[in-house]
Length: 232
Ligand SMILES: [Fe+2]
Image (cartoon, rainbow, N blue to C red; front, side, top):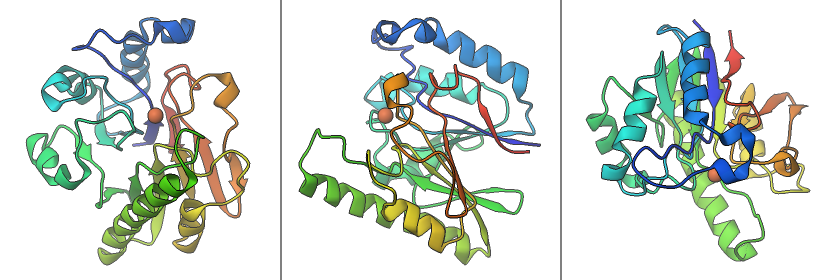
């Protein structure tokens, strides 16, 4: 029984989007995801998919992508990515009903793994594409959602946490953020994130041990689509 994570699958079984232009690592990447997961995971394991699952847009155009994920071995837990427009954060309960027993959508809730609570949300960091004011507003909203996830787990008696964010926990150049400080307050052991594609972005945020938390980037191309072992 082990916990794994992988982000940015960017599946497109029902759309003509391709990631091939982003380099060799993206060629037939869905086949490599399938092969690596089948080789590394069993049905006793838990796999957290850390956002940007599908290019489909609307839910009806993401069904094959979600089915592909459901067919991977183990229990699958999903975090929202910036491209996952099929997933309205406020309607997460509906998705959880629809995919009950196949996928778990983590938003304002948590997923138990041994004596840990897996908590998380999409997160946000400033990337120069919007105004600072807009970025601050999104960070505030996402921090509230992460707190709701921590509090749901704590209300059920959990004291050990692993945090999953789609966006890096800090903007470039930042050493701390609402997300890192909150994770420290709750005593989280690890913080896992994705979203950064291409070598030039792999070191945008924290990695390794910082103030008692282990930070890991799990974006698909960074890991060459091999899920990362988070907890044995
Ligand atoms: Fe992303």
